[in-house]
Length: 476
Image 1 (cartoon, rainbow, N blue to C red):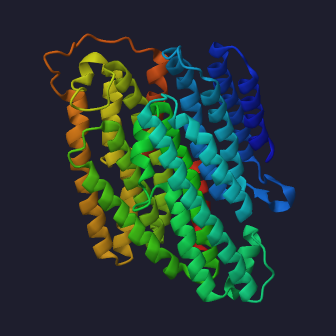
Image 2: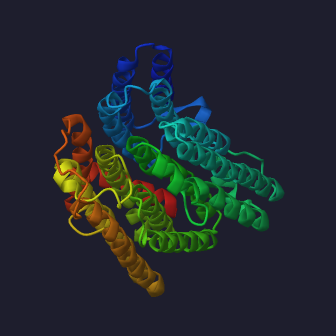
Image 3: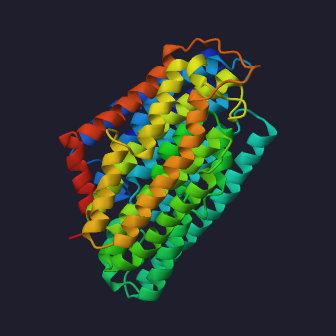
C-alpha cells in the first residue's frame, strides 16, 4: 500500500504523457485522482502502512496531510477537464502529467521517514509544480516560474545543509549517524547542542521557504498570481502543507532532544512576521490573485505560530492546516472563474462579478469570509483554538498581536474582495451573465461545504487523528 500511494499516480502520469489525444488527458487526471483517493481511504483505515524497512511509514501526521491534500486534489481533478476545455489552443500534456506526478510526490513526502527521502520529495514537488505556473506561457508566467524555481532551490539547498548538520549533531554527540526519523528521535537527547541548534534554524528557514513564510515568501505573489487558479489551489493547499509537514518532522526531533522552547521561538517570530508582512502588502492590493497569495503567507504564519505557542495551539494549528487547504481551493478555483470571465485579475477591470458570474462570485465571497475567520466556518474554530491556547499559556502579547493582525488582514482583504464581487462595473463593461458549467463551480462548492461542516462539528475520526498527531508533536 505504501508504494501504491506513490507509484499509481506516477503510472497515470506516464500514461497521460504518452497519450496523444488532448481531450482524454484531463479525464485520465480525474480518474487517477479518484483511484488515488480510494487508496488513501484504505491507507487511512489500515493500522500500519510501511515499506522499505521503515524509510516509508504513514503515521498520524502523514495521514492528516495526505487526507487533506487528497481531498483538494480530487476537487481540482474534477474541475480540470472543464477548465482545459476552455483553452483548446494550449497543449495540456505537460500540465496533466505534472498534476498526477505531483500527486505521487505527495504520497512520497507524507510517508517519508528518512530526511533524505523527505528532501528528495520536496525537490521533486518543486520540479512537478513549476510547469503548472508556466501554463499560460506569457512573459510574466515565465518570470514567475523561474523566480519560484530559484527561490525554492535556495530553500531546498538550505534544507539539505540542515540535514547534514543534524546528522553531524548525532555524530558529534557520540551516536551512530542516521537520518531515519526514529533513529534521530532516539539519538536526540545525546545530540551536540550547538550543532543541533544550528541545524534547527537552518532547517526551519529552508523548509519555511517552501512554505512561503516571510521573509522567504517572495516567490508566492508571482507564482500564485500567474498560475491558473487550479494550479494555485494546489500550490496553496497541497505543496505548502507538505512543506509544513517537513517543519513538523524537524520539530519532533527538537521535542525529543528537550529543545522544544528553543524550537518554538523562531516559529513564533516567523509566524507573526508572516502575518505582518501579509497584512501590509494586502493593503490597497489591486491584483486579487496576488492578494490571495499574501493570504497564503498569512495562513502559513498562523500554522507556524500555533506550533510555536504549543499546548492546545498545536491541535489548533493542525486543524487550521485542514481548513486552510480546503478554503484556499474554494477561493482560487472561483478566482480563476472570475478571471476567465473578465479576462483580467485587476480590480480596475474586474468589478461587479456577482452580475456576470453569480455562482462563482458568491462562492468567492463566501470563501473570503471563511478564510478571514468569522463563524461559522472552520478557520474560525481553529484560529480561536490557537488564540485561547495562547491566553491560557500566559502569552498575552502574542495573543494580542495575533488578534490585531487578523483584523488588519480582514480589512485589507475585504477592500479588494468586496470590490471584485459587489463593485460597480465601468460604463464600458457589460453585465451580461456568462454560462458557468457545473464542473467549474461544484468542486469549489463542495470544498466550501466541507469547511462549513468543520466549523460546526469535527467528525470523531478526524478529531482522533488530530489528537494523535498533536500528541506526536508535543511528546510525552
